[in-house]
Length: 194
Image 1 (cartoon, one colour):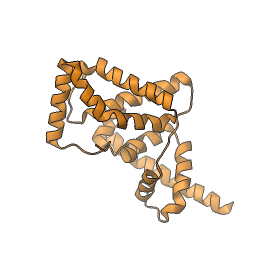
Image 2 (cartoon, rainbow, N blue to C red):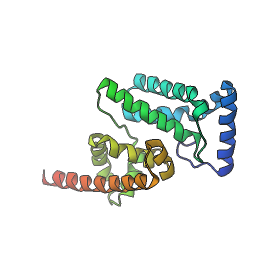
Image 3 (cartoon, helix red, strand yellow):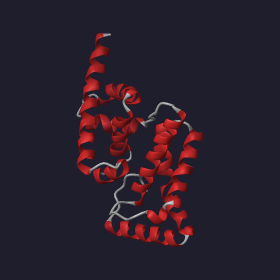
């Protein structure tokens, strides 16, 4: 399953039944783990670019999910939204603890999609610049863009993952796109003048 694919109402109900089964018998948690491990691992790896740190953070994410499973409440969102919320908190904890700078690793195909979203023409000319901009951008800007465009999460899920309102998720996304567009214009102008 692709990370951001939207689940139908029936799929959400079936998934929630699996979560309820896992609350009663931990053996069922393995199915949830198998279903979401790759998406969570890739999400964390894009932020750390360190396989060992990613493995540790992914383990912590699933361990915390398992330890707190009884507290999980279905809110009409995929179970993965809760896992991404835990993963985001664990990533932030890792960077605070290690005092390292948050990173962002990206697949070029995903960058092409994001450049197309900003309304820019000549995508090939802008992909490399955008990769550099995102690597230098503030964490909060990258985080919202990553969830929206790379993880393909809806605004309701983003609001849950980041613990903000849905309108704030929309506003942050549109502001991030505007800021990204602004930075790209400046960067391209500077490159042309150089």
